[in-house]
Image 1 (cartoon, rainbow, N blue to C red):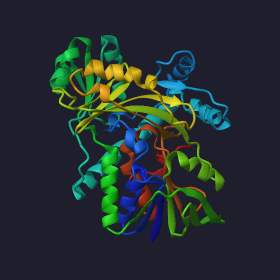
Image 2: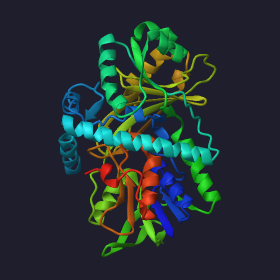
Image 3: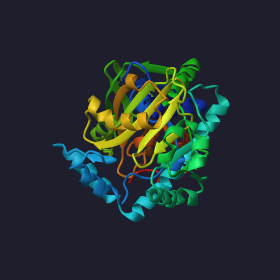
Image 4: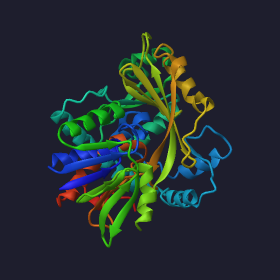
Length: 414
């Protein structure tokens, strides 16, 4: 069967790979000049089932309210003259009860942990170099009381089956010697040894190369404009280069999925949540970070990608604008400089801002909805790199008429 995959981020490329693996002929369409150049480029690089907590939690409404008056909140709400934004926020807030947050976190963890297994299968089949670090992820705390609260919070992941180790200060510094200079400011940490990290964009680029080498058509620099339907069937996709006909179609356009799905009468509650990242050359510095980590009290994540350090922070509900200014990065830049003063060329940091396609539950849409030959694989939010591989396998199983390893009803946003 000929399947057209719309979208060339990590979600679309992994979907194309699993479809090709099943024997389908694949055409992938990406609007940018290369795959993996938007959200897949600037993310933290953490493959972290151990951090699958949903953002729509009981604490989120107050955080969003405080963000109207102070800029140091983990979730920032910047009101727009947009009915789309306000309707999405109402749905998001509706998911912020303790009961729904716990259920969504469990669903999110199930998909994330399954996805990591599929990633490992892919790595067993293919030789892909993407600056992988498989030494786990460290979540450290500066304050003993907050460490105690963090350990209790991570008990949720332990109950779900994830390995969680509690480390004292000495154990944190033994795991990550690059933090030695600030050791007196670290109370301890939580360590998830089975979590990992790596460059999402390098992985996506390499996987797309494998697809092309095995017969897939990768069409970059081509924008999807519309989807043509007849009854319950998609008949073609229209791009700025013309029409494309296939037997089946996969919508994996991230934030672009919302407008197209609405146009064909199957609207999706996907809204962009803006994130910021710095990419800093290691240079000749003697003590760069060696393991992925999160400064939990500042909510700043740090990863090592070969000769670069990636730093990420902030979730900003502020519309579709990707613009940024140096002041937006000042806090995270200060944190990483404090933590790793001899870890990177801090004055050479590259600034980036991008949009995560978020649903109110933080869970994606996978499978069919209104049209029999249109499949969805979209809305992965802030951990698309973590969830993409399992989502792709589930979607491919659905195309093949097989029962997925995880039931669709346990995953899809509602």
